[in-house]
Length: 224
Picture 1: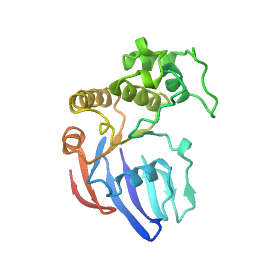
Picture 2: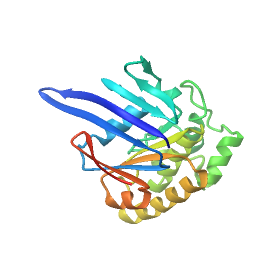
Picture 3: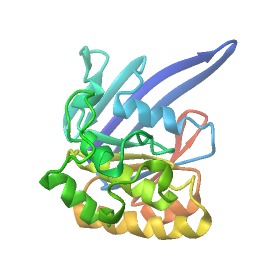
């Protein structure tokens, strides 16, 4: 993935403060940030995606600077070419499967038409075996189907990297095993670099080409 991170950020809530101080480098195609809830994993991922801004430091992906406080660089989220998969998938409830996938291909906030159709949408519907539910809305889908739609929407614009926030936490144990296997096969087939954050050791075992342990806002240990 060729990622370089050296950032710090202080988050405040009332009288409480949380200090994010993350520093690491990796050339792996699969990076797992592993640690307990509250360790700062999601804050780190949001900083990489450009959803939050560090107080200082630098983030670079494949040699491209995404954030550099000294150089005045802060690339907008939509220009970072990274896909972010939220823990709850963040599908648009008023859009059907076809529209949700199509939304990732459109510029601006105009919703795709209900029967929107193009080669890319057809490709991802087929790739994730979603053709039979293309007209359905998120509330009509199973947990596994919702995750497939969210992944298809994230991957449709052909991002340079995929960021996943606890992607299996909302699934029951049996489905979790199957969806891990699906994501494992998909990542190998597409060869897209990915970073996954998790508190589940099974996720780290399956996807951890390079595992970084995070605790109390900092990268505590590294295990290649």
